[in-house]
Amino acid sequence: MRNVRLALWALVIACALTAPARAQDADECPNPEGWKPTEAELQAKLADHEKWLKNGGRFDPSIPGKANFCNANLRKANLSGADLSFANLRGADLFEADLRGADLWETDLQEADLHGANLSGADLYKANLSRAGLSKADLSSAYLSRADLSFADFSFANLRGAELSLTNLSGVSLYGANLSGAVLLKANLLGAYLQEAHLLKANLSGADLSGADLSGANLENANFTRTRLTKAIYQPSSAPAKGQLSGILDLTTVRFDPGEHSGLVQLRAKLRETGLRRLEREATFALERGITRHAFNGWKAKPERSTFLRLFTEPGPIIEGVLRLVFFQWTTAWGLYYGRPIKILFALIVLMTFVYIVPLRTEGSKDLRNGIFRIWPKGRIEITADSYETADNETVERLTPKGWVVLGFAFYFSALSAFQIGWRDLNVGSWLARLQFREFGLRARGWVRFVSGLQSLVSVYLLAMWALTYFGRPFQ
Image 1: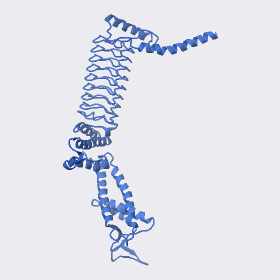
Image 2: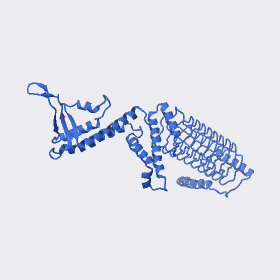
Image 3: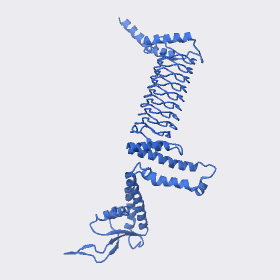
Image 4: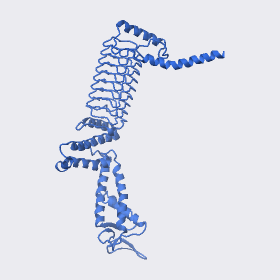
């Protein structure tokens, strides 16, 4: 009995070890390049494959009969309605073959030539079509969910109404392809070529279009909900559906060629109409940053003349680019980071505090021309021993505090300098002065006055940029 058990275990182990080898042998390509089966051979192999499927060959590789049409010449073959699921068609020539309604479930069609083939309504679930040629093929209403279509050629192919959910379309060429009404839910279109493609009413919800090229693509009424556009070339001929734009990812990173920003302008208008303010800001940032970048690149792209010489002969573009970069992109990122000017303003107040410590620590006798002075105005309230009275004269003193008081006065003067300029009743500097326990003013002289005035100008610009970008749309 013991010997029987050992024999059974040995048989199980041998089957387990040899099964992968037999599976590999079954998937090897014994056919010569360009082998063309006769009609009788073709029908016989299809019949054997059907029996293989019924006998559970997909689960037991040892069962013979699996169709192997690798390298086969099946040009214009009539395979409509054929059950070729799990078959090996790697490298097969299926030029203009009729595969209407064929079952190609998990079929290996890697590098197959399907140019002009009719695959309308075919079931290609999990099929391997990597690097296959399907230009001008008809795949209307085909089921391609979870299929591998990476780097395949679908130029001018008909994919109207095709099911492409969770499909790998990375690096695929869809130039001029018809994808109207196609379902591409969570499809991987990383680096896909979609130039001139028709995506009318296509569902791209959750799709990854990172690095994809959408030049001239028709996106009319397409669903872009939660679509990822990381570094995509976004210059389509029309915008997606107005109510299906929420959750677009990485819109700030999209690119476009010089002068080809109308598609992004259309998208921004749709986002504004929908009320998606954050995405609207991202579209504005991508648009203006791209224009700035093209201004710099266009100025540099003149190898016939030296860069140094163009600084003097053609300063306009570089000056415009620098002004756009410094005053708008660095400050608010074209309205995307509307809170950044306030952060810069307060950081500047802290930084200038340490600058103003220098004149406060300098004795008056050592530097008579520069410093910070405290002005006691006429009519201020003075407290005597037993009464209150107003002062009859104005007095001035050089401010030279001791110890940690220096830091307090330096910070206070920096804050007053930042908010020195106001609009009518909106004067923060005046409000800060009213928080003092005693009535006095701080004024500067010499280089300190110049630095304080410069800080005031920068601060008022930052405040204006914050107000304009927060409450309005200054870049539209």
